[in-house]
Length: 83
Image 1 (cartoon, rainbow, N blue to C red):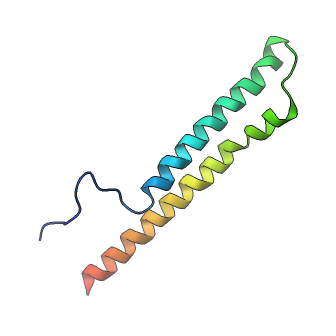
Image 2 (cartoon, rainbow, N blue to C red; image 1 turned 135 degrees about the vertical axis):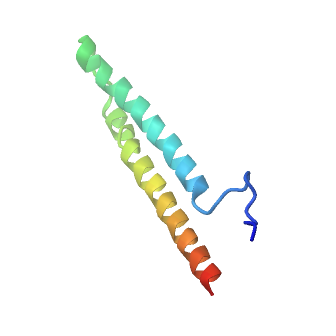
C-alpha cells in the first residue's frame, strides 16, 4: 500500500517546529548582542535586552510542542492503520 502523504506536505507540528526554531535563533542573537559588551568592556545594554534573551527558552518550548504534536499525530495514524 502506498502512503498517501505527499513529500511536500506539512505534517502536524511542522509549523510549530519552524516557528520555534526562528524564535530560538532570535533569542540566540539577542543573547550574543547582550553578552558582547560585557566582554568588550562597553556599556551594557538595557535590561529589556536580557528579557529578549529568554526567547531562546520560549523557542525551545514551542519547537518541543511541535515535536510532541507530530509524535501524537504519528501515533494516531499508526493506530488508525492497525484497525
